[in-house]
Image (cartoon, rainbow, N blue to C red; front, side, top):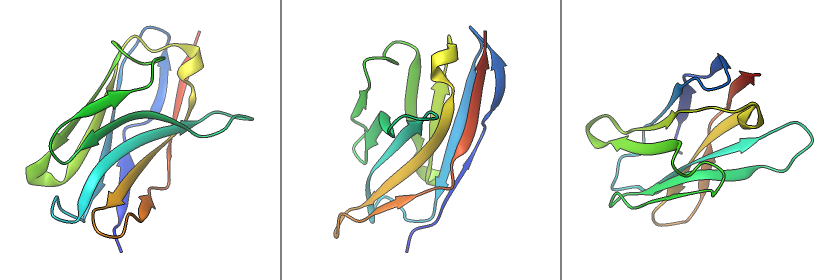
Length: 117
C-alpha cells in the first residue's frame, strides 16, 4: 500500500501561481511514475502532467508552457508548479502514483484549485 498526501491548493486570481505537492511513501524503487490529474465539476478526470522515475515528463496540451512537474527524490515528493493560471484550470487536482511491479495506481484525496477571473 502506498500512501499519498497532496497539499498546496487554494484560491488564486487569474494570472497567478500555485505550487502543488504530492508526498508518497513508496520510494523510487516501488513507484514508476507520478502524475497529476484534475477533475472539474461535470467533467471527466484528465491527465495534467506526468513524470517518470527517470525524470521524463509529459503534459496536457492545455497546460504546456505554464505548468512544470518535478520530483524531489530525496523526499519522495512531486511538485506541480502552476503559473499563468486561468479560470478553466479550476478543478480538484489529484496525485497518482503507479506501482512499478503490479501497475496498481494509488490516489491522493485531492486538493481544490480555484482560479477567479
